[in-house]
Length: 265
Image (cartoon, rainbow, N blue to C red; front, top):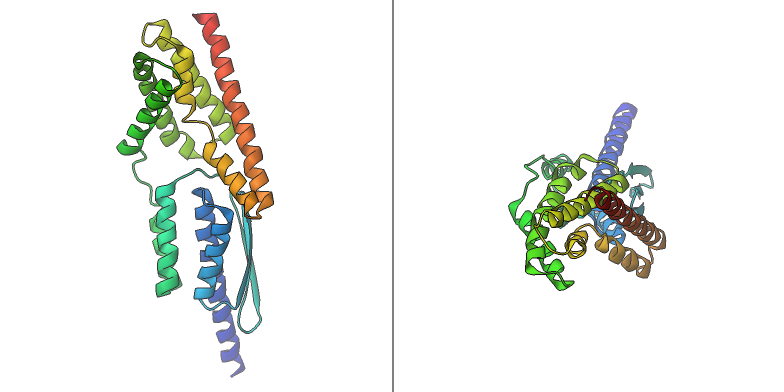
């Protein structure tokens, strides 16, 4: 009888650990896709509650998520996840939100839920024509908006394509974000100077401005302010600091491109 009781308690503990592990994996995925911290913490709480946890305590910032769940019998379980890289991906974020709502409504077997989460991250062809077209249209539009000519807008299009390809095939590999930002800025600036030098475009500055808008971490800055207003001061300050550092990397990348370009051309 005692052995059966021990086995039953062990199974319950294993089940609780699986629930917490799944909830944190889901929360980590949401942070990596650019979700707000309060959304992440609320999702983890709701998932744990749906699977019978009595209480859940979650703490998250952009580089780590930590949670403790308390069962109805008073036993506690704690896990954490370290987050090394993240980038806005609203398509996947919507899929994660839909999955969390489905789980809270249907409460499927935790193994099945984990498989559904895993299926969202099956590697696919990173080239997405509609997103690529969006990059090109945005660069051309900003070039004209800031005073460039139509010829400048045309010249900004292939640079936008290069930036998109770098995002799809280099950034997704997990390269250091600061280095990558400086590199992409340098490439964009140098290409703009090269195009104008050979007659493809008229104003290198306008072409650069149009393409720089694709790299500026505007969303990160907006999210940092939003999180501070919602009370997540630490996460908001971290995002704000990172956006400032990335902006400095962008400036350095374009500055180096201008210095080298002027020396060559």
